[in-house]
Image (cartoon, rainbow, N blue to C red):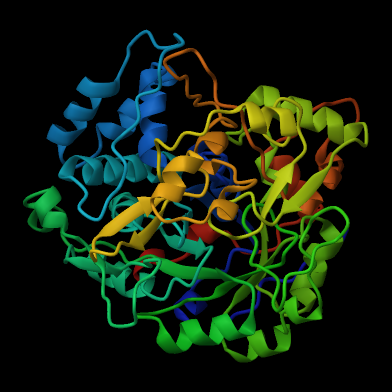
Length: 506
């Protein structure tokens, strides 16, 4: 039996705890839901919930009848019940289950209403509360720097539920540490926003004041535990920039290779495309781990480390452990729609699985990995038949208009709307509405008024083709425990994180 070493320790706030050697990836929209994160954390590793679009997810679960009453149980624990009751009055359908138009929350703007702020705070509280319920082990939340407007409300809700670690990629999250410091004291936090067409002298910000949204919360709750912060990065340059320029404490890094699922960092240098239409990554995109190690903070490796040998290799290279996404995305506990999950697992077992990196599909401009799946927008016919529609707006670009005001546009919205707003026609070609399509891949579906059902998109790392290694002979699916047992050969490789003293206050 292979024995893995206990994770090494570095100089950071995390140095006073037993570092988790396996971090479960915070994937997609509700793929890494509370059930998956709870399971992984209960097994003694770091379970992570996805914080993307949780307000919309909460509404969908309530309109579906909240089977098992889990959402209402978590809602009952929120410290202010008046906004909770408004949410229940507006969205809870006791019988659930009927196909009906999906009711979405208002889209985020520079001046969000108290109701959308409260919904986002409460939705993130619910997800983290359920993931932490019934055990004392740490739980993390994953957010995207590219989705800026809901970020502070999402963080605050997660912190109210006691989230222990925040992970963030898809950008340069320099401002997050300072925001965490302020939110822990219920102070007004400010987020400087990325605005297309702005000048260096412009300073467009979104403010978040907990006392405005929940009057009296400072006195009622008292100071919150400030979670640890782990940026997800792909270069030494970015790691150094974050250490030097971040507004507060950084506790370590997740180093993500371009074969990881979801959004990938663009290749460094001029974009080159292979014969499959995928961006080509080269030596410039490889991270010098010796230089990372010299920064003195713990790091985890992500992208292609979902096997026992690669796990051992990561530890031998000085990593505190690995982040694994793809293997968990298709396990029994993930939020991916079960029909999609079973279809794709059969393709894997038949040797028919395929993943491609699309350089233009995402409205963010980042390369995005897409699983080939019949009936999804990965098929040209399905993509072209889908009516363009932008009614969620999470990935919209904020841009400066000629009059100095801020507008909102998305390359995946109706072409004529995007062009009318000053966007280039060529930017609309091949763009996916990842908001709607990712929601279509989980168990919370969206039905339009005319009965149209949004087609899904499924994202995964290149290791998707190898997830058959987790399926036992004679079976057709696998659990989160199967993933852990396979990666560790059934050996405990880190001390139980439940024994960490005062974890969130270190």
